[in-house]
Image (cartoon, one colour):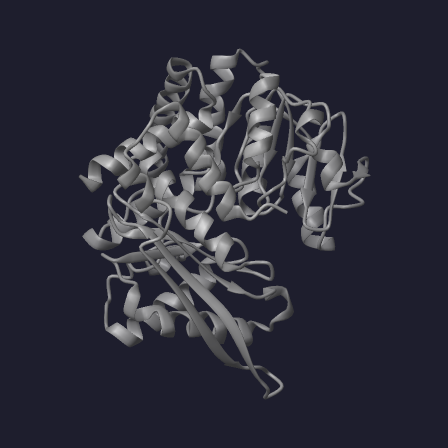
Length: 406
């Protein structure tokens, strides 16, 4: 499997071939500003001591404080976190928000921990990271397998250590401790705003058939919103399997089924398929909303969708990008399509710093304006440069970071 950081650097080089940047600027972007590895000692419920490996990568802060989620996953490693931190720097620049790029993680399967163990682990990460994060330095947030509750433990621990009472060090918090209205749906909704712009540009049908890989917070909200807009969700997957229904899936019913059963497989009037089959089914729009390296040179020739919208980080390898471009399949890249989450996180940070609380209608109105403006810009630039939207998004982001660096 491709190393995500190598993919990220390959994407950087591909963008540079379309528009050249100075070698000095590029060399600065080949390594993060700082990389932190920590060993977190946790006493488990049975009294044994377990050491967990944790990370924070502070990639680039030319445009503002480092910003990026904390991922709890058994496959998380430093190369993945470095790639995600790099993409965050570009994502914040594409969205034109005043943040840099960072990312954190712990190598752990949180599903194997009790709630008490999970809380001790979350607080343990903050205890060791407190000296290098802060409201004006580095502002973490949720990512895969981390929740508003985990963020509340972390911000509480940070307050105990530092006496900072703004709560602005962490975003993605529960509303009652300074979280933002609209944050839960922001990534999925931002992707829908972006999709709606491209749908018009490509003259796709008013009602599209859509396959969503990943039925977590992001993919689940996107599927629900798209279904409400009149699109037909024909395939869905979670970490345990995938389902397909030519007539379309009732997303609210799938949600209820998953809550009751812990998985979506076996949902009535659907056919079980594999995650790999989901990527290759006949549909108008494919939305990878799970993990990295899903669309590769091995399956890119079999993709039948007319448009791909990346709600996951890094789901498409550079080799697959070339195949999709040659086949004329447009792709809305992750650093644009899933920028809604970090955009509303930045709104949350701003509200905390100013001691304000904005209404959901205002938060989502601001989000819609940013996503539509930047999607239009990325699309038009791709036409002007005769390239794909990933490279045009990279070029816009790099121009903005370079300007801030100067």
